[in-house]
Length: 218
Image (tube, rainbow, N blue to C red):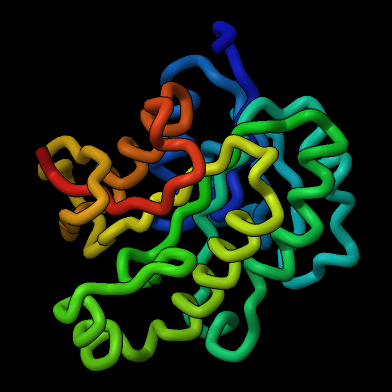
């Protein structure tokens, strides 16, 4: 990786996205963001290449220009209400991925919820029960995530994509270091999930590409 890379972060004002942006800037990278509200960026806006817009207005976003010059694309998008009845992330990925190909952007990380099942995979009985009881209000988000994972698996194998099925529970101070796991699932802070995704993005293990794994505390 070059000394200074350009990240495109989608969902930069969200709980995990804001920590990811802070980490990338701290390490000397440049960050481009697509946001609905400039105010949510606060004082950090001056350090960013800011594009104003929403993925729900997909026809209004020039995704070719959005990814031009970008080294890494990170999606930490999530809106419980908007995803209740519409797969907004999936619809946007159908336009974003071809633009990534056109502009030669290979590396992509998508953050999904830990209760979203991977393509042709399944959830453990415990996670299935949690998804369908206490977390049932988020089912629209999980269905959207699952549509994205199917799309990546079946139509985007030419990209070096990774899906982080994160167990995000709250904001707050770090609880430790997360590592990739196919079977173990930790409820983690936004900060720790962002840190793990950042590390996975800039230096992925060879077997991490084209996976949709959990993260757990070491």
